Every structure is written in structure tokens, then in C-alpha cells.
Length: 445
Image 1 (cartoon, rainbow, N blue to C red):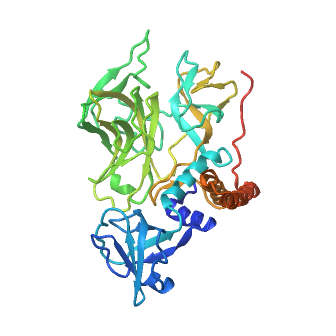
Image 2: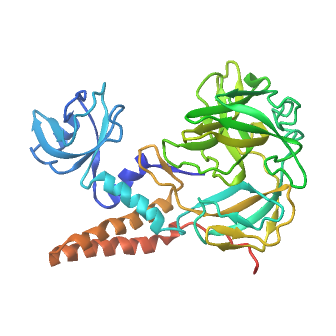
């Protein structure tokens, strides 16, 4: 998937609307005060107060992505000194890059994030959701939260992969299906208690995904537990992409904040380093296939794969896990091509499928999602090329709409209206940058 960082988008958007003054470097180390000193600006802006009431965005190490109002500009012997608002800056060592804008860059970022919503579905990301599993006598499934309402386009049933017999599963010789008589065989639990969950019939034990057992994981409140298996001869996979997927059953409420209270993710750990976690956490929808991908070019001892369970809630957290598959080399986890489901419909936050048959299958739900929001410089949005121009012109119409609404003077309103009209016309002309919609595949239900 092609993406563009905010560090690239923000100056480009600012140039589109005439807000970008330029990128410069400091000539004197930033210290714990409110001054930024540069010979770059001193030579380009020779007069005092030339940069007053503009905005600075720092791209340093200790001040990275700091945005401030420039309250004063002084110049002496070709050296420009900016005085910025707010608390004292952190000390920096060496030359650092900074950008200057006519408009507040925080407001420009807000406009970009609002534009991705206004431009939907002309601008979107394609969502391929494989976390649902088909259940007997279940006809209502939660619409994936990252697919927008009325934006499901296609649904497929896919046969399940069997971890123990999948030929490219590099942990296939381990207890990857949790069927060993000793459930903990090949698995190391840290701050997590692993016990066996056994299959029953009449009624069926839904907490067992396949076979006769699954692993029951309990994590105490305030703890982050891991359940990891060591890949045989892990050092043989230096530089290869490792894709790990593992089924997990959980019906809790996941946290979406940075300080997540409850979160379950797939995990890969190289040697004794910090575990790499999957980008998508368990959504609390029963059985979901969690995935993570990573690589390392200098593996000294081992590769470990499994799950991470974070529990900062007020009680113990329980989930179940089964069928772990790890492959080395391919850029995507293994999938089996499925059959199209034609009879389905959306009802609010649910998808209704009255005629899905077969319990040993997974669901692939394809639809349109919003482009990712961005806030820090390294954040990315799933967009490039002509699509960026469409996004920028959409963001410009939103940005200058605010001017029309706030000016009381008729002449100022007319100027703002002409500016808004200009970018709105460019937005309409740039429809070539809109994305092709996923074809709808559905019959009448």
C-alpha cells in the first residue's frame, strides 16, 4: 500500500494555499529558552519583525513536531533570531530543521484530517477484514469498525487453514494447534497463566476453535502478558519477512487510546528485543485472526512468535487462543481463495447473511474505510500522486470556509469567498485523482 507521511503532506498543502514560507536550519544550538537562531532566515528576511505573527514547526530531536507562534523577529549582522511563544524549548545539539508557515500548522493538519472525511468515498482505503469466523446458526455479524456504514462491498467465505498440516508453517512441528496433552508444551507464558480448554458437544464449546483443545489465557489486572513460541532454527531466517497469524477468542471491550486498558495483538520478538506488535488489535468480536509482520537482518539467537495481552482494567482478563501459523518469506500471511457470498445486507452496525453455510470457514469482508488520520510528522495516509492534489484542494475549501463564516466586513467576505470558490473549482477539476470504488457484489436479500 502506497502511503505519504505528514512531513511530506504538510508543506505541500501549505504551498497549495500560499501558507508555506520555507524550510530552514538553525545555525546556533537551541537551548532551554524561547529563541531559534538561523543565518538562513537572516539573509532572506533582512528586516526586523518580517516574520512576526507567523508560525514555526520544529523538526528536531527533543522538540520534534513542536508548533509555536513567532512573537518577535530580530536580525543582526545577517543572523535572524525568532522568539516563539509558550514554554521554553528543550535543548538540542547540532543543526536542526524548522519550517515557517503563515497559518497555524495545527489548523492545516486539522483541515487535512477533515478533508479525508469530506472526500470519502472518492478518497478511501480498501479494507480486507478477515477477523470473523462463520458460526452455525449465526446470521448477524458485526460490520468491521474500520469499514464505514453502507460501505461493505463484497463478502467471501474462506476455508480455514489447518496450522499443523500447512506445509509452509515454520512452527508446524511445535504445539501450534494446542492439541498436545500438556497444553504449555512449546509455549512460554510471561505474566500470563495458560491452561487447557477442552472441546464439548451438545452444546459445542465455542471457545475451542479447532480440534479438541485451545489455550485459555488469564492475565491479572495491571499486567501485560505474553504467550510466545520459539521458532525452530530461527537464525536461518535473517532478513526474511516473518508473518505470524494466530486465532484468539475474546469478547471484551478493547481500548483505542494510546494508553490502552485492554488490548490483544499478535507479536514477534527477535532475540531478546522489544516485541513487534500487530497494527490491528482484537476487536472483541469472538474468534478473530490476529496478524503481525516484521523482519530482522541480524538475528543472534531466536525468533519468538505469539500474542501480547495488555490488561489495565479492574479485573482479570481471559481470552482463548488456537491455530498459530508462521511463514518466512511471503509478504502476506497465507490465505485460501474463497467463495463469494451474494445474499447479504447491512443493517446499522451489523451485516445480515441469511444463507451462509459451513462452520469451518472464515469471512473475508471487503469495503471502503476512511484514510488514516495524521497528527505527528511520521504518521502516514494511504494516498499519493493525483490523489494528494484532490485531498489538498478539498482541505483548502474547508480551511477557507472558516474565513467566510468569521469575517463580518463585506469586502473581506468577498475575498474569502473568491478564494474558497477557486479551490472548490480546482477540487471539482481534480476528480481524476479520486479512487476507483470497489465493485458491489451482492444480490437481493
